[in-house]
Every structure is written in structure tokens, then in C-alpha cells.
Image (cartoon, rainbow, N blue to C red; front, side, top):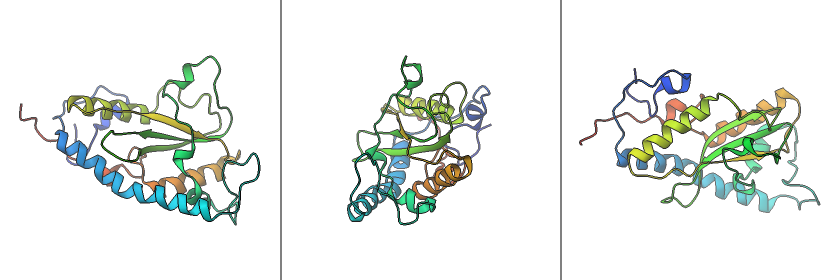
Length: 205
């Protein structure tokens, strides 16, 4: 049963059949997206300023090396999600996959009414060519999100971006993932879902 304060039913995330829920108003969804944008938009600007002030990149470098390469929060502050190439969420079906090995991945949406994309989820994997196959909590949230938008006459434009310049070891890679989650507060990560929840309301129709 959907609880007050949830944007998407928990049953969908758990893989169970979704419980009946009252549809969200168009205004609710737009307001939810706007609140998320209010938090994330300044981070894009701050990341750009940090990159401009950093040491020049050496050939082959995607990001400047922080003063302390072991500080995940310093690395998280320097990552500009827009510098990563967007890919279809069905990338894993391609015959030749563009990424392999350890990576962090960012799932984003690009609402047409907003100036910048919304970062919805941050994840980490040791095998970028395998992680998005099969069941995944974020897939369920994206499906519920897309359905809610469609019912309200809004468009979802999801994409996924991979950051491969990350530690191969699990512990430091997860520390970097958590630093990005704390900075961007993506709403589909379990650590931040309660913060961005929006109650369901009855459809006047």
C-alpha cells in the first residue's frame, strides 16, 4: 500500500505487482522536478567553476587530478555530469558495448521545461557492461516515474552516463559513489528517497 509522502509505490521497487495508487497531478510532478532542480542547478555551476580553477588537463585526462586523489569528496566536487556522454538506457543490448570494467553511472532525465538535466540516480559497478542487465531498483523507479509523467501529459527523456575514471577497488569506488550521492541528492537512491517524496493525490477526472 502506498504511504503518504511516497512519489512512487514501494511495491514497484521491490518487483511486486504495484499496489493501486492515486495518480499525481501534473502540477505536483512539475513542482517535484523544480525542487530537485533548485538543489542541483547550482552544483553544475559550482563544478564548472572548480574545473576552470583546476590545473590544466594533461593529454588523455578526462578530469583534473584533485589535490588529494584519495579524497572522494574532492573528486565528487570536480565531476561535471554533463561532461559524460549520454547513452540510451538500452545500451546493454548493443553488439559492442562502449564501456567495460569499473565505473560509476549516472541516470538522468532532461525535462523540456528545465534548463539543465536532473540527476536521478548514482550507482557503481565493477562491470559496466553487465550492471544494467536484469532486475534493478532504479529501473523500477524509472518505470514508475515515466508512467506518472505520461499520465500527466509530460515527457521523460532518460539517459545513462558512465564515468570510467574511478578506482578499481570496491571500497574507494563506493566511497566516491556515496560522496556523489551526498552532493547531488539523486532521488532514486535509497539514501535520499525520503527527502524528495511527494504525496499521491486524487485525480479530479
